[in-house]
Image (tube, rainbow, N blue to C red):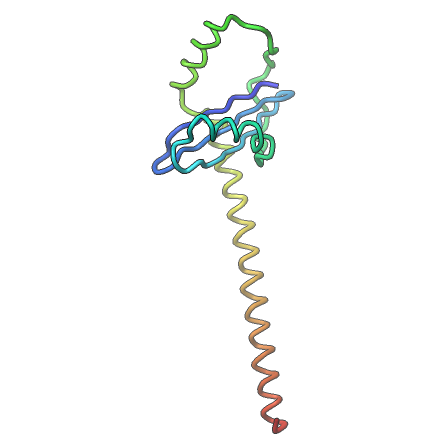
Length: 137
């Protein structure tokens, strides 16, 4: 499994995007930090909240998986610096926008149900009050 966690500034918040690829399937997760996260906040996040991030599937990934192997630390630093300059992948952005639109549809449906239930409850209260007045109580 290959995973990349990228932190960038998306006005006005700092956002972290987790891209992980397993068996050719790319999964993406997004977390909004708010203010610029410090080292302590990032460490806490990676230790305790990283695994709980809701992920969305983006379909097939880049193809062949890279095996995790021991590397020269200088090479790892150079690659990390190179990755820091790159924007989040377009596949990740597409997956995030699809997940956000899906959540929007779900939220819209649930709010409509809540609104209808509230209107029904208010109607029942009004009709009950009308019945009590008519009965003379």
